[in-house]
Image 1 (cartoon, rainbow, N blue to C red):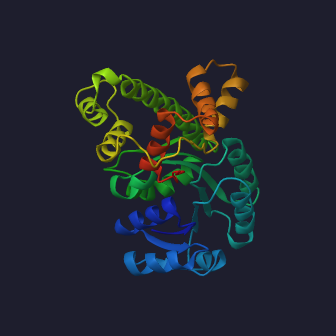
Image 2 (cartoon, helix red, strand yellow):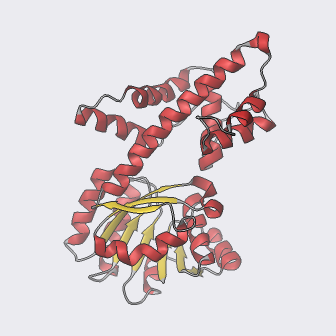
Length: 301
């Protein structure tokens, strides 16, 4: 197979590399030409100098995978792709777009006979090595075409699923991220309490490593936390400021619209807002976790 990957940042670049290592041809474009050149030299990617150039290097049924920031950039790129594609071609949005926008974009592309799949992508900066978790929406026909790509991006034929129609992929990823907020908040608060029990002089690195083995709370998030605490339990260089990507907000809005109680997810989001005005250890832990799994920038003192 052969596809174009537009956007070769932390996620897109690693996804292109993984595809190439699994014998899927990739034509790649990014506005940072140095990134393109590095992937050409290191992985054998076919480089492109523009989106138009990338699409022109595809033949037959054209598949274009977008890994771009959600919002206006993705919106404009999808519109600009229409005159470059033919009926039966497929566009995949693997970024963190709002599922309502994905439904609208799918309808827009369908008017031109172009398929659309919204793919929620989890795995962060570790996806290249470990494989990603992909949850995607679209037609059964388009999902069948993309199956070899999904298998290449995931681990041992697991971690990928066609979850439903257009919009369902980004909806599922939105809820995934809302849950992630709650899990991170609970872990950060618990470890903050352990650190605060000064008379016991507890070793957070020892305890988090202990919990990784046989404990009910063991998880990949705990693995990353334990590894980070081995090197620095005090997190002195990490500012207690936790950003939010937007999907946590959308999850809370969805809970309101459905009239479903989601207090843990809501409070976890609110605590990220509160981090801008607080200096607690738990916020440093949350910031460290985001960096560990997603490579998100850590604000320092």
